[in-house]
Image 1: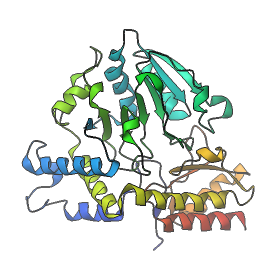
Image 2: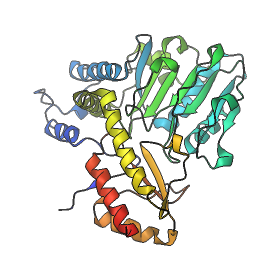
Image 3: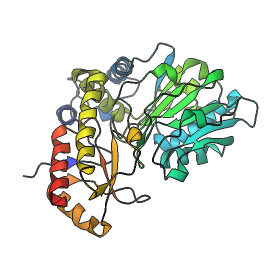
Length: 362
């Protein structure tokens, strides 16, 4: 049987060991006689699952004590509304929110935020076709902005920040890290809020992770629904609204798995090796093209194009026959895209590289 490697951008590949453990525990979690899907979110069994997940995530990312970890619903796109609903109230109305526009997801975020506040595009790489992050010295920031929003890894465009911004004046930075959180070491203290949908590097769709500094709680707009108010969610340990319990359980298994793998620092080194291997194959000649500027190439999401795009369908058919799945690029940009998240083994990347070389006739 052909070995399957799933390069989907999300919902994405999960560690085999995690799926095997979830399968073994499906009907009876730890002798409770219940599946996790059946448990009360307020019962002692699930509370232990939840607290273990929070503890392990805090350890993996070295989250400071003055930050709350929240598990919410609505996905990353939903959080694009929840963020301004929680933070725009920090300033006199109408507040202004700064954005650095580096691709499709930061573009979606600024459009959503404009429903609740004024939006200032402090910098944009649109003129360069979203192939880089504008240098910070070029950003035109608002002196009294409610916050600055950035997307540190653009899943569609394949652009990743290679630096953590430093903003004077106390303006908090909100970072959408949906598609590369837990893939590299970060300094959480440099950000006021970090959020991300789980379905890329953490677990199944339906769960959204929020890490928020405590002083940013309690500033929501009056129209913010109570179930989305971070202060209320934090006070109830993510249990004010019934949380996505099974997704939290799977995320907790992933966190424990990452700890056994040596933690984020060890995983980052493997991700560097995988990305280096794939980009080397794409750069070998002009048969394939990756258009992102070298310093900002994503380690997680690698878009590429065939120089002869009439071969796209043939390429995808050949890849599928070899068990290399979900390589078609996003409909908004075309081409191909290989997402090589934490759970993608280097053997999968090597299989893709072998096919790239074969298809190019090298």
